[in-house]
Image (cartoon, rainbow, N blue to C red; front, side, top):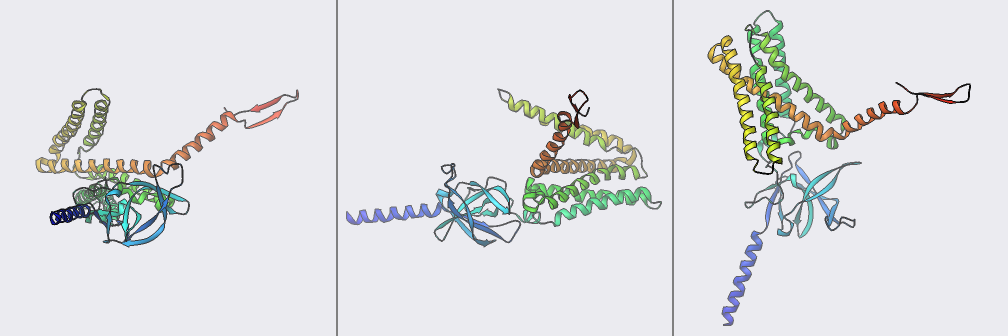
Length: 373
């Protein structure tokens, strides 16, 4: 009996140990923008929010190189949102994971950890960016390739319209360069989502570099938009249609958003309105392409009309994607600056209305205040 009880005890211990061992989640350090990541010590939070956030970031304890493995205990499978000091006087909110190193707990930024064990990622809720493509788009190389491709497309369009020799060939070289730029843009969005705008983060890189990056993106967006009408107008062919898909896509997208919003706020099942929104968007794109194809086929014949119409769709997607990213970037990284500038301008305008330009006492001893009309 004692032997049986002993065996049952050992078996139970082994089972508990096995469950405990499996209830560990392994992550690999994988900083997309550097070759290592900072590991912060955990400091007891003595503030008013200590119940909600029991620990805060301490000093940097050490760094770990990409590829190092970390263990997260079952009790630490959540995330903690903390303020990280980026540089003097600048902080940003970031999600951190609690990791165990040599029996001691530390904080590591979630975005610098890649899940490698099990079927559920306990600390990262976003799409996995830790791919070869994600690493490539975390460098400056693809963005300079986009700039180069758009500039070459614009130059080909301009030169094709100005030169007396070979304008048709030069103008149509705009097509592959624009296609390359749009392809790189879409790949970047696929790889990193809106994090593809990491180089516009002025808290990390400072206002100057982030502002010039934003300005460069604005210029590239304009050049990308202008290249198509310049190319189509500079061709020996005339009457090419290219604006219909852009206008229809924008109108269809707005109509779809309205339908989705109505479906979201409705009391009943809003899926019908959402489906209607997608149908309206799809019809707008398809009908505009059909209209464009019918017009272009008269100029370029069937094969040329089909290829040119499909390229117009690519161009439309590229322009809208760049415009959307530009707006998201400004809202995400420059909202405070924009609000401050607008507030200053409004305060300056209102001050002229409510504060006198000058005042004086007339001959009767009355105080006279002069305001701007």
